[in-house]
Length: 68
Image (tube, rainbow, N blue to C red; front, side, top):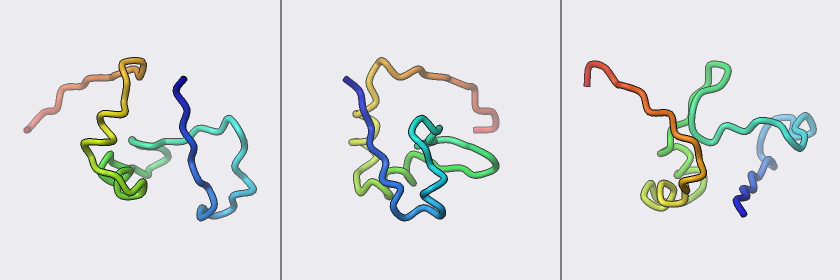
């Protein structure tokens, strides 16, 4: 069983958060962005550990990066 628990104690207006709301752990939403490194820092873990926790059940979206 895959589950995640997100602590919302320190976010502004936690009373506006409801069960079933979208939670972006890595990515972009409404002009804001969080990288996997940023998520690791918030979670107090390493990049390697975070990446190893992503199982095959998680959908991947591979995109070409230009200019690299």
